[in-house]
Image 1 (cartoon, rainbow over the protein chains, first blue to last red):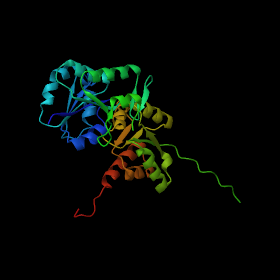
Image 2: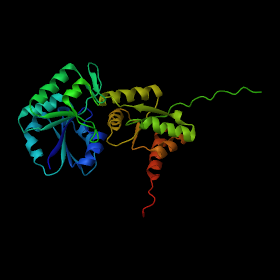
Image 3: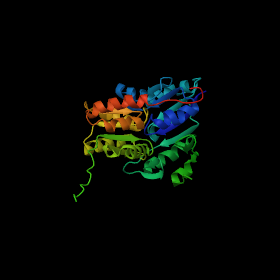
Image 4: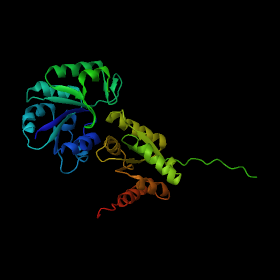
Length: 163
Length: 136
């Protein structure tokens, strides 16, 4: 096994991740890459309490995640890597620590400046550009909130075609 | 012939928040069973970021004047947001993993303080889960 999913989700650890993906994939660990959370014991405790005891959570800064990515990819257990935004995922892809084959856009929610692309994806023009740039680096980028949903290709995502 | 006074809705006593239509569905059931659904304020958060969920829950709590939050899932976004809110409110209570028996107990516990009622309701909800059949 290895890292089975590289997910962008601004809610970080929440029900869809722990239960929706966690159960069918049999996840044993989550690598949460977020510079703010990596510096806060309180934030880490908050997220750790949301996962079952058999699921390990590693909290890493972006810089540390780039260095450690290949180590987590060679872990024999099934795992998931999580970032809260596109920019962080792009840094991991560009960091050269290891190849990231796919990127799952799992949830980027509404806020001022963003327009709705899908039920669970809202993007600013800059974020649209960043997603396109991310895809040119190699990973196959799709949107998919839960395993039972169809993976929506990036081109459809950007056109707002969820069908 | 006396004029019938319109019933006044009781003051809200708690927020209910969770995935999908969890809150509205449970409160609908509470209303159907007890007629006391007005004690509970539903919050749906489908399109919101965690920060916006937190802001919305704070806004609803202030507007309703309540300090009790029921949520559906320990790992859920509403639970995460509520725990952030609790960090700055010593008198607030969060009950994660709430079910219908939890809320039914809560709406009948009007004699207790909201926080005591919430704790009692949590125990009642936990104890109300049973398994039947198939050699259980």
